[in-house]
Amino acid sequence: MTQLIDRTQLNTVMTGWDARLQLGFIERDGKTILAKKAHSGPLTIQKCLYPEGPTPAHVLVIHPPGGVAGGDRLALDFSLAKAAKSFITTPGATKWYKSAGREASQTLHIEQADHSLLEWFPQENIVFDGADVTLKTQVKLSQYAHFAGWDISCLGRQASGEQWRQGRYKQMLEISREERLLWQETAVFKPDSHVVTALAGLRGFPVFGSFVVTAGEVPDAVIEQCRQITLNSDAQYGVSALPEVFTARYIGRCAQEARQYFEQLWTCLRPWYANSQAIRPRIWAT
Image 1 (cartoon, rainbow, N blue to C red):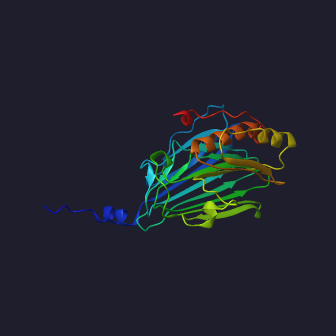
Image 2 (image 1 turned 90 degrees about the vertical axis):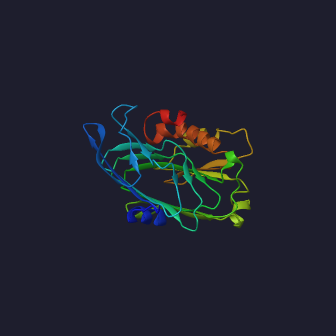
Image 3 (image 1 turned 120 degrees about the horizontal axis):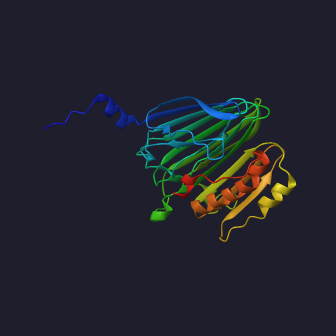
């Protein structure tokens, strides 16, 4: 018997999923409220949680399929009104599957008003052999807004012994304040790219990550505290501070180690940029 397939389902299989998520936060009587939520496709959130009190609002972004296939397109849009504060993370690693010749992508657009704070700390990206991925993040800040975010990427499924032998992985990050560019970087990785093995690149390590904070000039004592953090491995890591941007880098063999390093940095940095202690979300322990 011939099975009939709905045309919409067939188009989805052939072209991939379009998934969108829009979140808008406002401050009301000292509490951050999720005032706008709109989503389509397999991308949503759980309800806001408040483990630290009325602010920040903690949000967990969920992608129910558990992985992103070739042709899938994820679009996230976060906006924070004046004095709103939010902490956004994910429940687990994002898996980027073999592309079968089609690009998979994620775009993240963030806009923040004065005295707002967004902390965007997703768990790692795992790039399967044969994946073709583009990630683009754009952050637009008002004069007195603060942003902190990290990303961690793993080329190949290291836990399964898989090496990354074919594919493409592109990352773009742009941060501006009042239309003035603060930070911009673009990286394109292919298995045969010189940057994968070069001393000025990944040095042959499969895991890399960056942590960026834009909250003004970093106090010397905070920088020194961050530099005291060490790892017991052959990973390469370090921090630096420009007049308006703090950044940390990690290249090594373990995504969990990268996240542990960034979490230790977060413990040092958060009292400075958020005036509060770092409180680890329970989801990170599962």
